Amino acid sequence: MIWLNKFLTRKLILRAGIIIFGIASAIIAIITYYGQNAGNFVMEIDPDAYRRGIVLSSDEEFLSPSPRLLSDAITNVRDITYDWLKVDEAIATDGNYVDPDYKYIAYTLYIQNIGDETCDVNLNTSIVSIQNGLDAAIRFLIIEDGILEKMYMKPDTVEAEYHDLPEAEHFISDTTIMNSEISNFKPYQIKKFTVITWLEGQDPDCTDAILGGRIKIRLLFSITSAEIG
Image 1: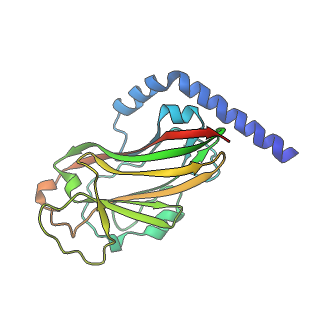
Image 2: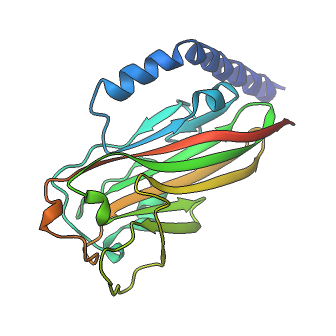
């Protein structure tokens, strides 16, 4: 009974936070998103999905549930290749993973449904801003629950031969990297995602033309359908 009381109290606190957020969500989004340099990668819950109980966290205990997470910004990035990534270490590290040897974005996040609906949740990954055509040579890797791994890339402008790289799916468009779905996301269910983005040195489009380039990527979670229970 003590455990149950703590559980219900935590649920009420989280829902109170959602209500407060809902009142000012539009204002907060405008100020935080456009008012500062937010880094290279942002993960967000759609305001409607957040109000209905979909939350993010950089830790599995959800000590600080949030509608928005940011990766650390990285600069002076050099090209590397897939085999150099420390994928296992990134999966095992909550939040930002910093490789001591190479520079790339690696972030592990958790999503939980604390609402009353079983939902289908869409994951949309898009390029928010780009300079110097840096997207031509990047790779986007998403790993679900530490197991299911998918890699995405922009189509090459010339024929390329790759060695020891996983098969990659092409970006959906110039601005959309990928779309996927969490089906039947039940109340209090938790999913874990690790996202890694790097500049792939084997890509023929990884040339001096992209030097000084910048990119900002957004992963947006939104509810596409739901039912109570």
